[in-house]
Length: 280
Image (cartoon, rainbow, N blue to C red):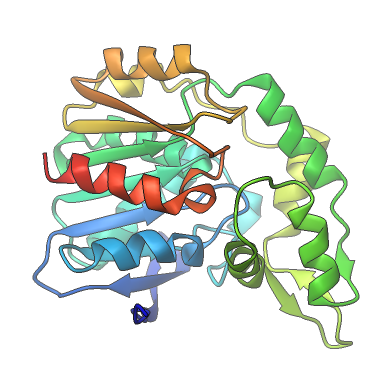
């Protein structure tokens, strides 16, 4: 039986907000930063971080409005704000150059950061997202948020709701994801940790406009891995191949038995793929 590696849970102030993060690995190991997606949080990366922390010093952030990080001042969930958070975070903990992984929204934030600060990245891994968000996947997520009850009577009811929209992830993974997304209210209900403004902006069409990230990709100079789930509705194979043709040093890996939540749907194959790329 494998012993689970417990992360350190920390909070630091950067870009004017308190950012919570998890940390694994030796202080002197090469740094690797992980950014989750729209409804994610730092804990979703635990399997990946545990697999990599023997060789890397791994940091997984709760991005603004999620997990235990502050909600955005003024409801600012623009890509520019996320990039400023990341720049502030890595400056605050003293990282000069590092490896960056980003999934979904975190992948878009990673592309934008890499385009603005190409000299700061050793490597970049973009997980199941592109400069263009596919309408089918984007509309699905909006409808899921629209149909999301604000509270549940108990955790098991909440779990049943979120499991209905996922074909591949194990129950243990879904329990971990849900655990980081929710809290117990004063009257014993289960509520959502993420800022209600995130949902409201998405379903009302008032979210910050999506940034055109193709110019950012053209400025990325480090080795870049694009990971796509073969069952995803957020990243077409055509867009993924165009991405690796656009960056200076691009590689594409497709993971079977995985939708958009690639590293949660099929963690074994995802971890094997990124380990192989990191050591290449």
